[in-house]
Image (cartoon, rainbow, N blue to C red; front, side):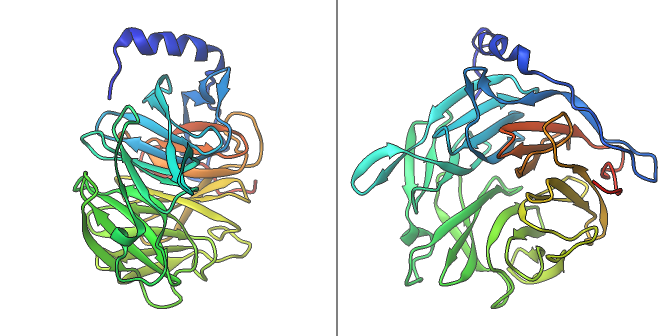
Amino acid sequence: MNLPRASYRVFGASLAALLLFVVLLPVDVSGEEMIGIPFTIYGMDGGRPFLTPRGLFCDLQVDEILVADAGGHRIQIFDSEGWPKYEFIHWVERNGERIQGEPGAVAATPDGNIFIIDILSLDISIVNFRGLPLRNISAAELLPDQNEPALGVCLALGPEGHIFAICKANNDHFMVEMTNTGEVIGRVLMGQAGDLKQVTGIAVDAQRVYLSDLAAESCVQVFDRQGQRQLAFGIHDTGWGNFSFPAAISVTSLGHIWVVDQIRQIVNSFDAEGKFLGYIGGKGIGPGSMSYPCAVARDRRDRILVLEKVGRRCQAFVLPEGGGAASNSGT
């Protein structure tokens, strides 16, 4: 997926004026601190900023950052330090016409195939790293036994190199596992009736599946790979560790769970058992603050990247030793 160095050096020159140092929030009671790294991405360059960014993926294989910009109809690719490398328009078929799509979720396999969920399509599309279409996976392929179309809502890459999608049909949520070419190799009904209402994000590790849910009684739910719920925490209420709008989820290599709250404009951190550790963010447009975060991801150095829908940028944070959060004081 790498471009020649000369190519992205030209792109990078146009972005240089937009690079900022991320300033940290107050430290927590242990004295640990979230350390900013020197980039904040606003888009490909000053003339092509993000318009309505929605999806974020860190490609651990090649150490790149992928952003799905629904408003810009495109996928943008950056290196690990935020320098732009490539972009392409995502096209969809709608009512017999080929139109520019609105990509909302993106994930890439280790061999460079990119899976995209688009707001304007029921299909999950697969393109190569230059955006050339490889195939579409129809709703009928995703969930052939359902009597209503399946709606793909979020994507994740599992440790086996497979893509996992949460698909909703008949008010049930299914996890669909696919190979790098889009072959469906597993379907699992997640939880019991009523456990899940409106899933907004997924993360997958070797043993567990982590889901954020906008409307369920428990905003964060953890399942085994067979779909049995193991853990649920966080409710729609005031208080630390609770939520107003759980919008996305990610998990670090240490098992710490990071969940976006779009309305409170923070990202909460929990340990593997659901204990609240702290948060990053707080309403604002300055470095370290957030303006309606919508997606979160971790890179292969366990840095936390946060995409902002209204702020139209992606900020990155380095975790303190032990992977904790920056603050547990008020915003």
